[in-house]
Image 1 (tube, rainbow, N blue to C red):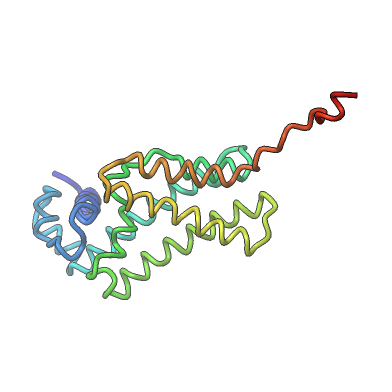
Image 2 (cartoon, rainbow, N blue to C red):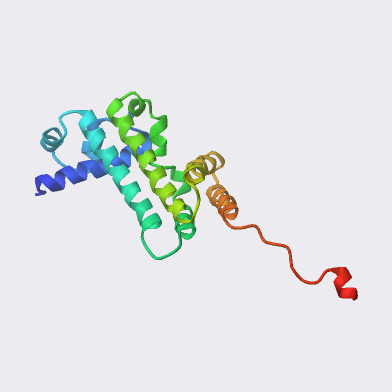
Length: 199
């Protein structure tokens, strides 16, 4: 027999998975209940309304995603740009889409002030973390924020391209293209000129 805490966690996990697969609007509490395997009483004890369940599940998804991003961007001894590259190149299930990015197309989320605010806060916090790391590389504030927006947009756009084309390499190509722009352009050889060589 599961404890109350276990039941709540199972409900949240089931809701996260179902929201990622079919959206908040298209998912009913009864579907989450069936997927979780807990008793009906547990659902209404922990989450009296669908909004309560959605807020918990969306919040958990946001917390998980931000924690993963912070591990790439803030942990380790690598330099700032290398940590941003690590975040961009992290293996992702490109064809599944971003669990949070997809919520921006879910009308049930965008029409709910509380849920929309959770999604908005995720992107604001993620942009802040990326910009802070880029400032460590010596970029001025405005340029660091622009590049942070570009980095996050590359990931989100990569998901869209991969799903639209059915090709997971579309995301990897987008990331490779952006990462190449972060590296200094190769300089021309500095050997002797033709004239000098003829002397």
